[in-house]
Image (cartoon, rainbow, N blue to C red; front, side):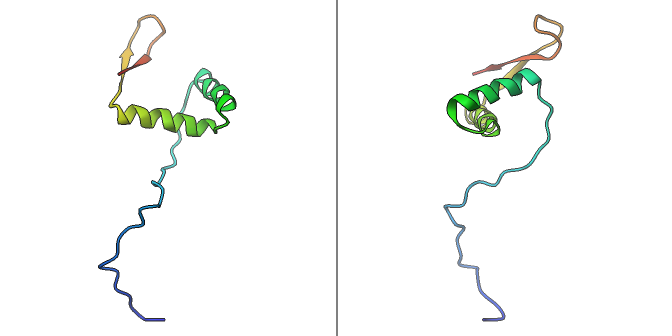
Length: 81
């Protein structure tokens, strides 16, 4: 085995999946229940579904519409296309 290898001409593996970051977020119980039910219907883990939904929001540059003190309670939000 060599003491030194030259990787200056190397390229990244195009087949490596995008790295994921572990985060802790607090979600409403009803939101988690919704994705868990959807998970059973699609046979996909609910975390994967939540990630797919958020990735779709990023891809389409969707931004939440947040309303304060209106119907739905403080901090109620909707997603706008």
